[in-house]
Length: 286
Image (tube, rainbow, N blue to C red; front, top):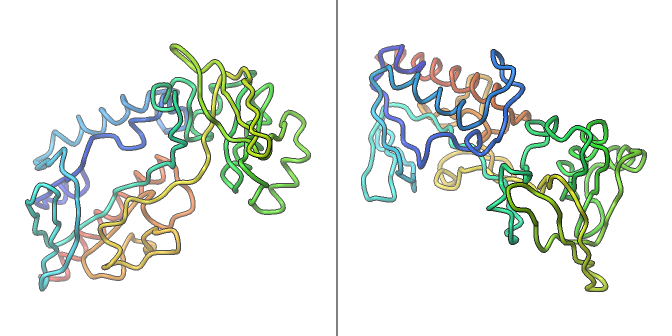
């Protein structure tokens, strides 16, 4: 929208509309909405953007990004390519999955990938948090003040920061289940239980839960640009305060970048800022 409002010829290339927002059951921390479903919010974005002269290539997967003189070339899986004066990468991230039975079917129905987004929906309920790193420990700490009971499931010892480990150990509602892995998530219309396997003894047990918070990490959708752009050790694109990368005319915004806070409102603001920066870059090139 910001690019189009600056009268720039704008093309949007995306596999789908919504990304991680479209997988979020309820968004309760977006300005202007007391509560809105992720798909509805994504739909509103799309509907508003459709009022502008924007070309959409939906269902296309980007496989490469290169530079040809002052032109940026975006290669697509279909064999097509898009040539542009500037590129904004807003490709987001993917949450790592457990890939166990029931996970996909119950996603958004008790299987949660963002405790900050969906945690308040589980007030007074019993949940399992799966993860041993900082994200898992932080989710357990956050939910200790929301849920009635929190099982923290980790396949081994905790690997998060010591200060987080201390806080989890002191949490009254958190029960640690180290050396356990999730083998199946149960439920009809929503999550009702989870089956765990003790990785040392091989024994399994099923516990009743209302939700399973999967916090086993995420990875940025930056693989097609790794040979061109500077990234940190986890593949997040390094950007300056305006979303500029180390390559002239290439910008990035949102969760694919090395920003710390992976939140919808932050990503939206960064998208607007990157579009304005791209416009400023083009003005200076003339």
